[in-house]
Image 1 (cartoon, rainbow, N blue to C red):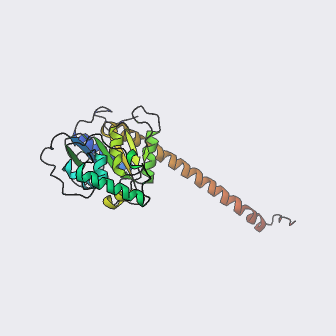
Image 2: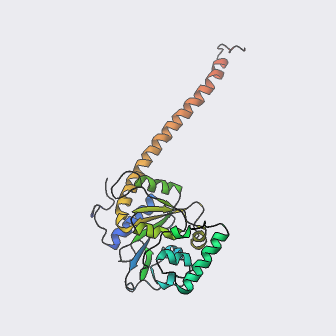
Image 3: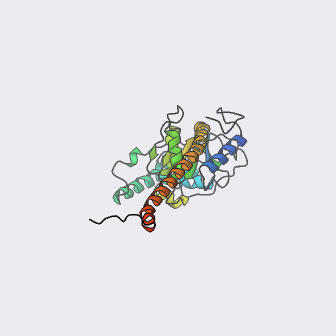
Amino acid sequence: MASIMPSSGSGPITTCEDRKVIGDVLASDLRLRDPPVQISYLNTAPLPGAPRAPALPSVCSYFIEGGRRALSASREDHEACEIGAFVHGIEPQGPLGDRLSRTVGWMEGVGYLAQGEAGRVPHNDTAPAWSLYAPLGAVPEEPSVVLFRVDARAAMLVVEATSRGLPGLPPAPLLPRPMCSLVPVLLKGAPVALSFGCAGSRVHTGMGDDELLVGVRGDALMELADTVHTLVAANEKVWKEDLARRSKLLEGTAERAKAPSLRRKAGGPTPKRA
């Protein structure tokens, strides 16, 4: 499988330029509407160039805002959404814990969550001190995970890429709500995962009804991009072959349908009626 980065092969992605190239190739191959977003978990505040994010209503809001520009957020900045804060790894104590209990109780009451379902939601064991959100390759920090929204065709290619038995790309899990739980699933082991999103994420991110979210662990990005790139070329060949077969079959069917009437016009025998 040829690499989209011939200078570095499939080795470590070490520069912003490398990550930018990968993001551009993925965006082209998957026909993404928006560029991939990288999330970097940091122990200290990022260097200047990634200003502090404004107050945002949910953790997933940072996913979208980070696709427009680089921004940073502290642990506490993620507390506006109590579900997202829990997934982010923030201890549900004090007022935040009270809000989380009330919200979960209400969601169970209206039938959105089943009893006990909230306790099974994937979450980080510990919240990072800082999170950096940015377009892929826009900042020097390495991505912990990379996220991008896809339509059904692009999701097909991602699933094909992870179903080939490659050592670094086992089959990608397809996750239910909440959408932000995609990140801890990746950080705890899955190289690639897909999420259907959730009611809240579609409000806060503006995701279309025809979109899913793909997440890639930073160290799996190169292998996924290479595999998808190979599959795009292969799918193009299969598409053209199937299109030719379909056209040939339909042309043959049309010719056979016209044949009896042509024979009658030429004075040939008319089929007998029963």
